[in-house]
Image (cartoon, rainbow, N blue to C red; front, side, top):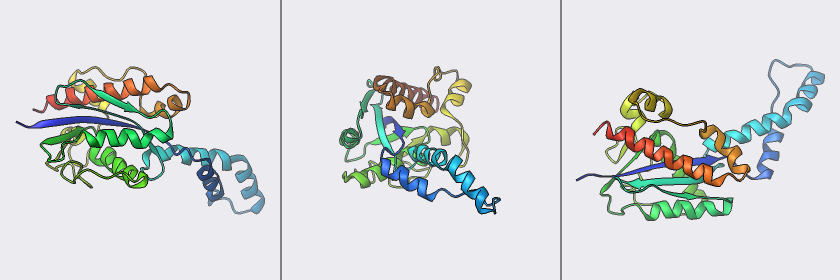
Length: 217
């Protein structure tokens, strides 16, 4: 009988202030500006905000961003969440998830857009943090949507090149969706210390993933 591991990640941007300064130095004015006076004025007004915006996007970059939460459940078991209240906690929560994966791979990983985001982000964070990766059978290194070791609910619905948000898919299938909180709010919530809120949100996403996946079985 096939066994499934339903999982989801929450990520936050890079927390290294020195990298923000590096981004500030790299900000380039629009190419439409030709006069040095106009360039200097634009940089004075926009350099900081452009760097902050670029820093925010590192929540999608496993090299710079961080995993703040991993939630998972095996088959119909209760959903477990590991949450990092500090950057120093990140390594431990990833290790806890990896340690619970079957090294002999009798399980299939299930998640929403895991082939396009979650698995790759985890792999990069593991390399950066010096975490030993599970076997390629337990955690495929660069899975495709049709990989037999994963079930990506986004691809299962929209096809290999298609996209559909989890919330939209829940609406289509009559499954309870997100209630006023989504992934775009995680970074601010983490900065404000709303750690329980983030962990609960991640658990809820695993529940939604499991409910979606069951429709395909």
